[in-house]
Image 1 (cartoon, one colour):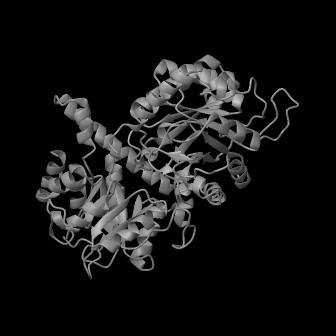
Image 2 (tube, helix red, strand yellow):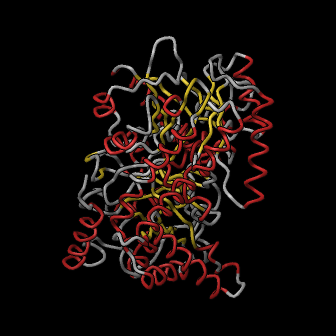
Image 3 (cartoon, one colour):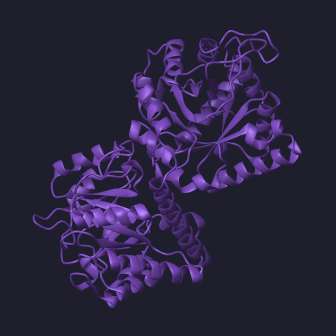
Length: 547
């Protein structure tokens, strides 16, 4: 979708407020009559009462809010999100009132109005402070504030209003300017609190990162990964969670909550499985790998865009061009001089093959080389490329060695080439806690049916998949390309990584046609298997930098 759906929603909402007022014609309680529960007071899923969406249309049009809320609470949800936007999501303030009553513990004897089984979030495209008063009276414990649609002053006013009711402000961010606004709110509230913990930003503000772009409704789980380290401790991964493995992936990134809508609204029994998977997972090195990759990708794009602006290109055009610049992995390193040259030219990853091919490496070389390069780059204050071990089996001595090196941190990740890596919610298989092993999948593609595995692996929580050409008898590095018609038809809008037959001569055309997020190059810059040609590598990087 190229239409700015967010703008359409907000414009329609402003018109409705002008016509109906902030209550949209509903009878609102004069005062709050239900208990309280701190929003994200403990880690856990936030499950949504959601009838429809702009991207999917009807999702669960016949849901009964009170029944669904009780199902979520029984499953162990930390909070229930209630959509109150009518035009596109078919929610109402009546739903909010109903859900708050359904999960209330019924104790109104003290001044705090008792407690709830779980917190309740009003999720809407709020624009005015008085809407927070209404949410409080309807029983909400938290309100969603979308940074993209509120200016600095209004966002701060609304956060203060939520604080005045001892509610949490759930501030949703995605773009760099959203982060700036979030930090402004955090700093201001802490300054005004003057040491009072009850009024601190940590008590009032919960940050959320939407993997869905509200302008286009496209989903990318790497967006939350890229900015998790820029957020406060209490942060939520929003959208794109459909399976227990997706929930575990979000937890591996360090998020304290996930917000799930469509998946559980359509299939309420899934709620308990998501709660269990999220609770069982934890921050780990697999999540660290994806955060590091995403942060470096964004830094590379920002540097490229800044250079273009300095050269006189309009900012919007520079940003658009920067998103077409791929990360580069040079694979099949078996000589120290080739690894150093690739790193100096700008390689983002270096690959070492632990499979019985002509590019087979060994443990001693990888240990010595990675230590040497890391030490040199650290001394110079530079970012070292990420080191990846490529395996085609887990049971061979070579495969076991790569897994061991990744577990020790010598390698940053393992590439499971041609077979499935363990799912994020899998704690078996490789002899390690496999769900925590930093790794990703590489699929061999030769025909349409091979793409069936693409969707299956995504359900395992994988945010990215490397696509390589399938050639019988050759696990990788064949120099062959995936048929263009397959990529054009099947890859679609999902970001992917690409290998197979990439050379300095064709990389420009490949990037123009398919915009891969990462290109994996091996034979295209070699004189012989494993023997890199410095001139060809330089031509490759020059071609990438001139895109």
